[in-house]
Image 1 (cartoon, helix red, strand yellow):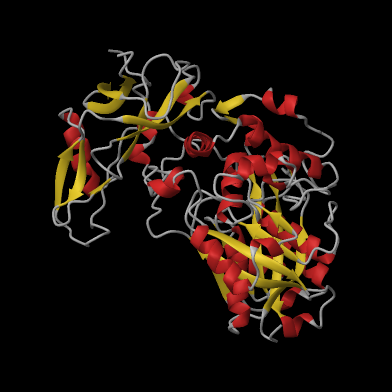
Image 2 (spheres, one colour; image 1 turned 135 degrees about the vertical axis):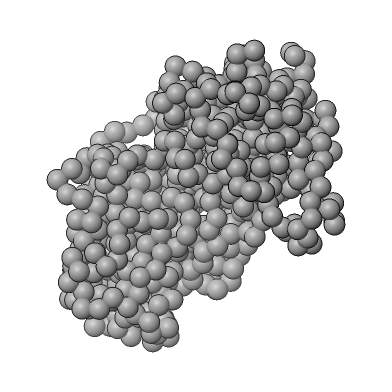
Length: 389
Length: 143
């Protein structure tokens, strides 16, 4: 590792609950709790944090966070564009770019949600992209819009309802071992999945991620500074964010993305760049934490990042490949957005770090390389490849 | 004809370059923006051709060749005015004669009707709110 290369030295989180579950604090309070937990995890005096990053229209302004946690200086305040969780990994990438270029020394990417106070997702939003072309037709929410893309994946590749279910079942099984998971203690089988309430065909309730309250934070610094801290750092082998130039509002908008990649996430070029920069291939991955806003979108993401071939994600999950401990490539070992919590996928970055530290509750033996992806559907999306130090 | 969805749903609030699309709809003509220089068609409308950067536009009328590209049967309402109005079908129509154009729309008729990709669709204009004409479609076999 180069002395100035970025790495993750601390992770922190609050309690995760169902949406509306945390009513005795605010999003700002949750953000502070998670950031201070990340600093404590790293053994860093929080005064020395000098950078804050987030994504997707975060409501918690860095000036308020900085003064609340007692930062001496605010040298970096950066947020990635993009709806929902597209920028989850990108917020870590912004922190990494800042510490590598000397514009901050200790930067924290954070996400905080108190949906009981700020409103749930999945409801009518008058500011939606290309709203004029979708709202008059009764298309308002992500499951309705993305169901169209998932249906097309079924048309093109023969993907089945049960195959979508296998992804949900793997996440739910992994969550049974994770004390932080909202769905711990609620195991699921295929009959239970198939019986779940239809939302927007082919998506059922259990194809949709949770809605949650909670916060998490990821502390980034350079390799050189990491030597003075408590944890073995997780190397950021590569980070990338972006999308196709012709993606436009895509499947979360007017569905005007190119026909050739319609039933996909548009992230193939991003993935190729990410692997090339990290110097690894999909075959080198030991574990992957895939943003799962919806089962079908997670399947498309796995294809676009080369975990399986284009159109092959259905049989891939059906084969047991993503199930811990015996699958070829365990995915969402914390339970994902479907069964751990919906902290817009920053919780997936925390799980990637735990895997490389050897601390996951579904620990992959000798895990050395982990892929983490951001929300599929919007552009930009983002991704990280993390490595064991 | 009773419109497929309630008149109280949000109405279009078009950007300046989108207004012509809706003005044509008011005349019950389904027209798409294309580039006057290179001829490529695009939807939704944008102020510049992404292929040749021309800002000159011409409008092309959709032929009677719409096909069902994909669909979803919405069963859980996400807008208060749609409570009690589910299920309904949101669909994407494609036009072989207008490569690259996909139109988000509704498919009229029984929401439980058997559907398949590539089904031929017939355009049906519906006045959802006074003066607001929306391009919707019905399966040709059933229309």
